[in-house]
Image (cartoon, rainbow, N blue to C red; front, side, top):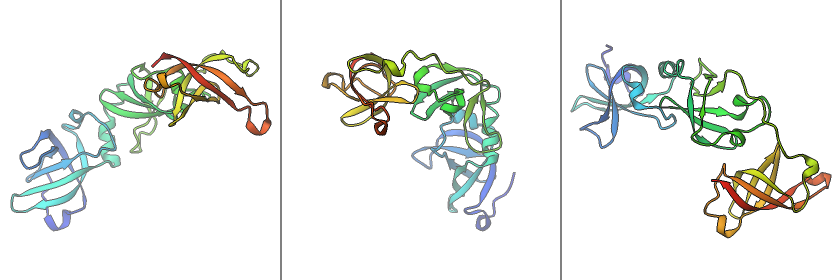
Length: 247
């Protein structure tokens, strides 16, 4: 194992094997312990959500941030370099089943065996379909693979991307007073955007009695109140949420 030269190693990227993670007497927070001839404690980087147990026994890069010469201690933080990520990604090569943890407009965060990865809408579907139209948080999704093996990003895609599901709403069906099922895409202080068909949102008011129950991804029924036919309005749709089908 590499011996430390205090003057040379400060602020440099070093490499070591993690032997444990947990509470340390020297700090009030959980830290990683690096195998070394000195006691080396490193903190995690919140940018990535990875099961801490996955680090044990892995070789990672880290940066020295502080040196306590009196107590022979070195403090640092994990550096998510290509070397570190290559070590972490080994756990993802053989685990292609994930659980959707959080769905956003652009895609979703998926948990694969304790490691949080990111998937864009285009990584799952062949067309413009968005993840929240088909999946909900807690759903399982299989046949995932890493997008970038050589990069530090933790992003995945489906081995075979999905076709868009059949859509029951056609443009000619969009008439004032008609009701449609949709998905809450964005929530603002006084209104929300409800997605009802490909690239088509309805700007909706939210009744007071439903305000506390509506969240992004909720399945709702909307009633159209305005259907603009003007080209400059791009057939703008306005409506109101009348019922929550699934929160």
